[in-house]
Amino acid sequence: MFRKVLVANRGEIAVRIIRACKELDVKTVAVYSEADVDSMHVHLADEAICIGPGPSTESYLKISRIISAAEIANVDAIHPGYGFLSEKEEFAEVCDKCKIKFIGPSARVISMMGDKNTARATARAAGVPVTPGSDGIIHNEEQAREWAGKIGYPVIIKATAGGGGRGMRPVLNEATLVSSFQAASLEALKCFGDGSMYMEKLVEKPHHIEFQVVADSHGNVVHLGERDCSMQR
Image 1 (cartoon, one colour):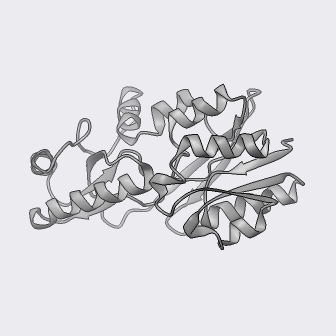
Image 2: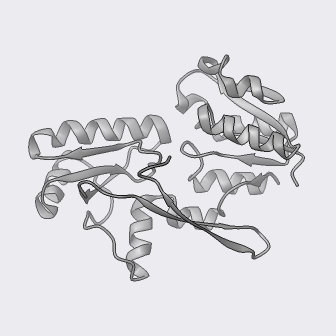
């Protein structure tokens, strides 16, 4: 069992992680931006360290500041929550180099699945059906128009580094394509530090079912069943 865990996130997910650690009698360290000084996760944690100004690009997405906080607090593990750095291969690698346990997938797995564009390619290579979409990253509005024409409206623009519904915009017709592309890319850049986008055919009235599998570093793997993400976050 871990002795002390730093939670590299904020809001609801940080609160849930801290409460789970308390149930296991594990000490917790919260990190926060100047804008979140009075947030609930800051008050719930055993320790709290400020990692920068309000913009997430200057705080929650700054790997060096989070690692510095972890070393100051002398933690033995970091839980990234979801979003922010949770799917950044570089973050998992830095944690490993600093002898801090990253509570999550290995850097190798993140490199395959953390980037949605690469994840699509990996799935296709494995023979898994994927929604029709772009091949690779869409670099500009003109490429977005070309791919939308090939795929056929309606489409959805997605962040390659996205998660939690961030960096996504449905596009029903060409009239809103450019503004949606720009808005999604900007949101992704702010939330994940990466504004890269790709495109898929929009599945209208979808039902999101997630198959949950948890594994540890000792070769133990458990299938936890299915989760209806359309009904439950």
